Image 1 (spheres, rainbow, N blue to C red):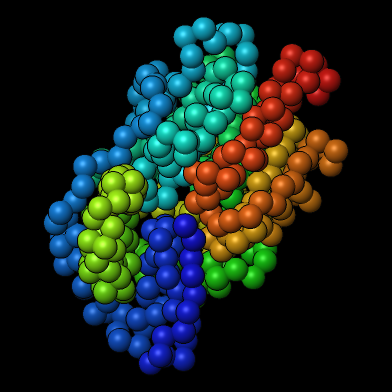
Image 2 (image 1 turned 90 degrees about the vertical axis):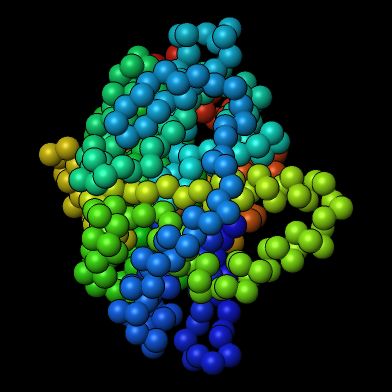
Length: 388
């Protein structure tokens, strides 16, 4: 699922259609500027309430797991088999924290990154299950999420392989800068590392609106960026498609049990957005997407100025050819910014868009088993000895 762009018949400006809520406020506000930004912001409050009608049950994890850490920001879920060798390096999937549930990493049987990693020979696989922000969490910033990630790593023995998906990718890369000795191998999939790279629509949108716009959105949510705001507002941009079209499609396929099951499963994930702490959200918008401080070596985390050159572990970069949420250039820019020797970097471009990198059947079948083998090879005892 990505972002499509078409031309509204009544407007000269392009219309950006979004299905990833993180970026929705930028595009929606630009498009509706002619109709009045203030009216748009006022309508958000009403839409957030209206969107609660007919909400499906929350999504569930597809693969058996147990919660081994319950922290302020996340639950750490362990999918490892009971017979897993406890001496092997654990693999932690750092799921996106961008407005939807972390279950995207374990969406359903046959479309699960977690399942694929396990079936490809990795014995210890865990995933971050990021919590929806409560009112008490509204002041959590990026530092808090990095600190909790470090608690997880320490509890797992102090050394892990990190698989960062989308927004979880830049968080994992930051962690690898802070604690290079704790990261045996790093996979970044659809992760925006250099947000100024390429010419994707997100790059343009990130610079169109002042920070005050986002601050007002967060204030309207009581210090949080509410998932219902983002999702309901996007739907209102396309009421025919979102409020009527999908029900017409469902009626037309009413005899197709597989179609109905797929639709119901997707709706459980899509229609249950999560809230983000206002501080975390505004830091990401300003410091990462507007000012691009991480790629410039100017981002300060846990009291330290981060430089991507501090990353020295084996690195695997994965990008989608049709990904217009995180363009390939934003991912592959890391090649020239990290301290990892070029011969220990793998860069792979695959067909498809953004969400397909994590749950697309073709990518899971053809690409992620290769990534799994790479992780195993680069986090073994021999590989670690060679790195030292």
